[in-house]
Image 1 (tube, rainbow, N blue to C red):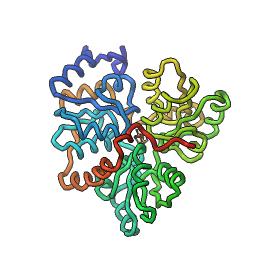
Image 2: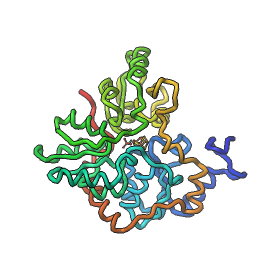
Image 3: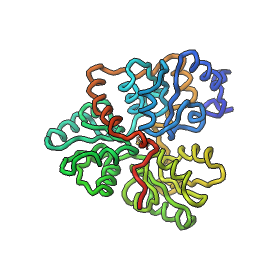
Image 4: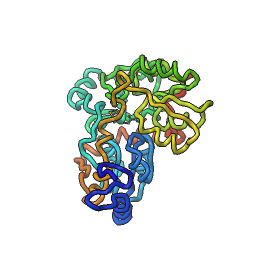
Length: 332
Ligand code: 13P
Ligand code: SF4
């Protein structure tokens, strides 16, 4: 079996899955995984979820170690919320284009240029940007949170201009948008999506709100990864076109083996650009090593952690407990 992530993959004679299972018990570790992880990692995880659900799990767990199979801002969030735990990320290079698009210095200057605005930041940002923000949102909690703000409250929204633009259009609120994008969701092509729709005219389209408006406008449902998964479970018909990172289809196929899920193509239809290159850095081998060595570990300056926690705590307070099943909101 292929040592690079094949199911039951071996590394120098090791049964990685057995070793990971042994180490997670020895370390009293919980393995959290995002829906965009490789199937073999999702299958090993104690919990698979969207960004809000994973934050809640990280805040609640009584494990001593959190092995976070996702990207760095997610593992950082776990550390901010659970500072007494050891948080390991299998590959510390697992970043995010949205985080990269929003360096703290320019974001601080942007805030200072608009002192009468509140800063709402998408969770896909650094701890430093969280510390500069008033409230953090995820794609599943953003709408509920914005609706709780007085209509006259001016808002800066960063770093995702597509999510911000979608929320502004849907809620009829003007927001100043930071110009960041997710390189994965930005890669979907309207032409390719329409070709697919012509092939499957009865299949609804579910899209993540990180997609540009020219994709979201064709969607029957728009929501977070959990929201899309729930839509798949309740939709009429047996075929769904999925405009988000395609690894989420693994959970759909497990839950709904009789339905068909078709990933919307990226680029010209022939590239792999709808696969998140950052999420893909995590492998079974690296997860095994992270549990064995308790490295790479998230470490954070305590002053920064406390400052970043304020905006995350506000999200957890304002996101109703029913949210987290994922809705940015179904389109009418
Ligand atoms: P959600 O799982 O919260 O929808 O986020 C999607 C994403 O792109 C995470 O990086
Ligand atoms: Fe960042 Fe996009 Fe990858 Fe999510 S899918 S981690 S937003 S680059």
